[in-house]
Length: 167
Image (cartoon, rainbow, N blue to C red; front, side, top):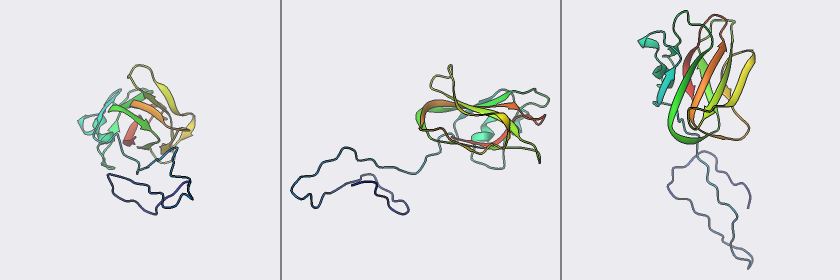
């Protein structure tokens, strides 16, 4: 046995493996791992931000599942600005997908950090070296976190703003 996959997905509560012929050796497993589709953890969770432009652009807009609404930092607020989501419990995090509001031709510098206690944060993705467009960020291996935070360190005068912060 090795990696067996099925094209597409199935809905199941239980998974079973049956050895039909072991050539007299008997069935034995080291591991029986079942993987499911990635789960969106951040949607609808509590989000806070360093500042808010107005009630129409509050932090909750970045985790509401609506690609048309967004969080925006307060007008005239200086960099850095940040948005943080409390996932409510600790989870294994495998990727973060961010969709930022950017003016044509401009990028941002940002970092994504994670924490289990909202006190000590560790680096998940560091994009502070050059201007880029946020998108899907992954870390080698998964990390355990309850809190995920994105900090815009340089927005070229645009201010921090996110349509979606998907963890």
